Image 1 (cartoon, rainbow, N blue to C red):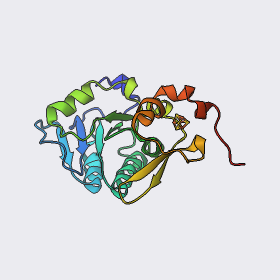
Image 2: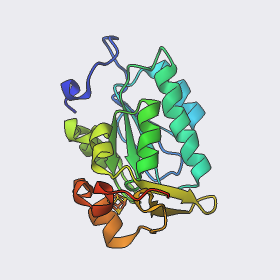
Image 3: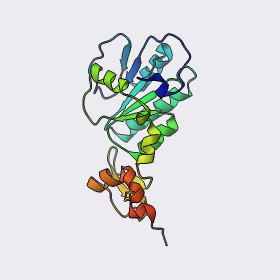
Image 4: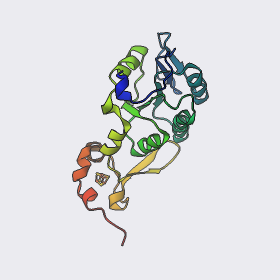
Length: 200
Ligand code: SF4
């Protein structure tokens, strides 16, 4: 991990933990080094982060009920409000690209994201992800990538419908259009983005 690329960090000279991982779904295998720690709940994460002042906090937000996802966003915000942890960078490991989640995490103060799908990760893979972190993983970059007209309407506790706000939310988005247009910088050339419909 290139620390310069991560921006300002806590001035505490010696850190006992290289990173602290919060994985409530248990999708990460056992960590093998003493400078790594794994916790399985937001409360544990907050406690451990305050005590150990890790160099990086990694929060895995997988394909989970919205309520659990919101709790992890709130954890991120709490870490950024806490004077003992606010200078520690946070990396969110996300299941997939999701504009609203990115906006929520941005408001919470999360600086970095990686998209890792649903796979189980081990200690080596987490370290590789961290080692490869750089400016290209900054959350703002992804907010610029995804079209701001992508809207989400909740259907039940873990499913939602995606629609185009530039087409009065009458066009449901999915498949190729969502992945290859709406969630890419190509959205800047979309006819609806350039000429959004307005309610008459
Ligand atoms: S269809 Fe066009 S305007 Fe609508 S969300 Fe996708 S890229 Fe944006």
